[in-house]
Length: 568
Image (cartoon, rainbow, N blue to C red):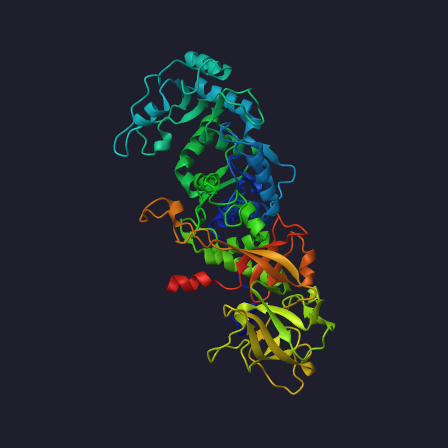
């Protein structure tokens, strides 16, 4: 190889590393499988609110379609009328849309295919591959066998095709009570894969469906419906989480027996996150037990909770890109998610000054009654965000912990005799403080150097400390809600823990602070804006905020304090 080629190779952009699903798609496209097209879907059950684990699946499925110029469907697996609700349908649509996954005109429901699924089931019965069983659910479980012993065939396994067709039609007509009969696939009661030991395809459910009303008295099981839905919609790559890996042979068996279009099921590792729980059942328990304030409580891992807390779709995409797509389950540290949020918000969040625990700072030599206007930068990471004006006067608010009367040597904030910079304003030197009858500091006094306007000294002297402030003449009162991790232990589901998972709720997961002082610009904040309260954290306006009662939620702190806790 010549030196010239070596030089060119050295300066060529690095080839992007493909994750294993992309590798499968690339190979399929190269071989012409599925006509070199990509069609994915996200198939939620409308029985609860989506959480960040679902967000990973939504982002993965939609991004694969977008990356390969394909299509993406949103399909509701609404096959269990006793647990489903229109409320969940609407919340899921909102969440998927918020994440930027565009299903265009391809919004589907499993219930759209009930008639076709029924006809497919009839076809399997005619092929001698399905039968009506009178065993109860408990009896089916008891006869399924063990990993080392085959299951016991149902006494009704060898019913005639004619009898099975008659009974199945009567099941549909509603002649039998719930649990009286099921339709089961006739596969192999000795299979090492339990999912192939004559799985149930239909059960009897007398309940009102949120879309079908009382039309149906039988409902398909997930394993029967899932592959058929993918087949009917022309899905190419049916991407799901690892718990469905052992269900794939059944997915394939149903489609092969029917001889219909056959997508490829691919499994990836689900998202497990420290300091949280992902189980819908446990999230529902948190809501029903009033441990949190509803599904969109900002401490919840639900997508609506993350949105209310101030997370952005871009941050979640950064997070998903960071953790990648794997074949093996693992637990991701919550700090990785929080860092993704910081990375995104650092670029886009407008800077504002807010004082959460205010005390007055009085500038003794500043002219009484004078109010001047100073210029503050909106975002040093993005010059296009420009500047804003902030007022400045004799009396300001500063953070209580920015003053210490008897400070240690490396304390660089206000203390008697020390000079600091007021952000965007002046150098000030602390002279004294005022205390109440309990010895609590209520005012800090200082003098300013009028030659240092804008925070710059003409004589070149330097100060080590810079503190933020809010002008008392224009300060806006507000409430700040400091949200933190919901659990105090990394794995609240750990079997080594004693007690139930709710025993490990973090008592400091929410701190409400009233009498917060904000700069005037924050009075006009909107719910879709994100702000960095300088030296404090990232915040967003809460949905319950009003003009008379401003409420700001902390999205994330400026630094990961939990990493320090973990090292102790």
